[in-house]
Image (cartoon, rainbow over the protein chains, first blue to last red):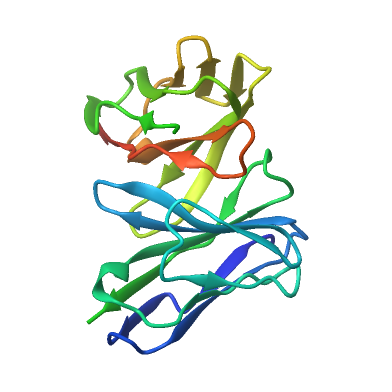
Length: 112
Length: 112
């Protein structure tokens, strides 16, 4: 089954404790991206990747890191999480930037 | 910078009605515009993608139109059903970028 998976789905952590949210797709997509969704603000793009080893900042990259060492995986790293990073995070992928995006189920993060 | 607006934020209609959801964007130079559906606690599902050279796309009871000159897209849902209840989001991909800009969505409730 073609899908985008994210882990974990739910995470509670404390300020400053490094964490990684994994994202994997099995559709051989080149374009992958991370979004955060906050009430009243909609979805905002954090980082995106055009292909392996090619990443770039979205609109809200501060406090986040990403890597793309393999085509199927695009982890999101929070080196020192803060409460303002409490949010619902989505990973998405597509064949190209102008193609239909497929979204993962989301990761709900709470930073205390 | 591109801004995407969806009005109204929420809408309730009786079952069977035809309805139109609106999406406005400030910069007409776009690669494409996509419509998504989001169910509570779930990820986004792509409904329709309209490339900048197209005027409309259809899938079943859904029809999406694009008017770049006026900065508007509409999603038409025919013969609405309770199962159509969800939040509908539009997203534009501005020309010259690889960053999607999302609207904040319209929460639709179809009453049985």
